[in-house]
Length: 82
Picture 1 (cartoon, helix red, strand yellow):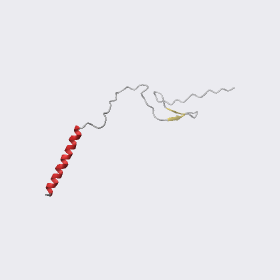
Picture 2: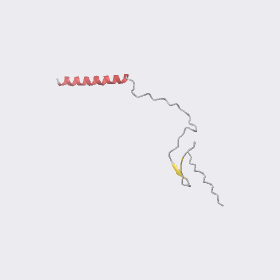
Picture 3: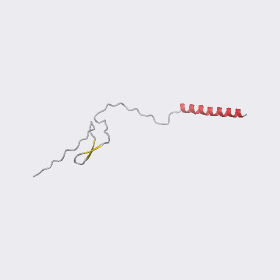
Picture 4: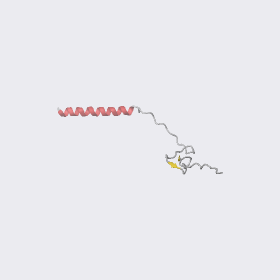
């Protein structure tokens, strides 16, 4: 009697597992489809520089910029002496 009960439980578990696998296989995904991103060649406007900073000799802080991600300090202001 106990063996029959265990056999019935195992059959029920296998039936539920097989049913859930079949339902998942036939149901479309709940997530939206992932859009395809075209491969675009790198251009002068298609780049990113790291978020580093550098302090110039005049005390100002600058970040890397430009197509080569270079640090360019501003030119010192011209002072006039009379």
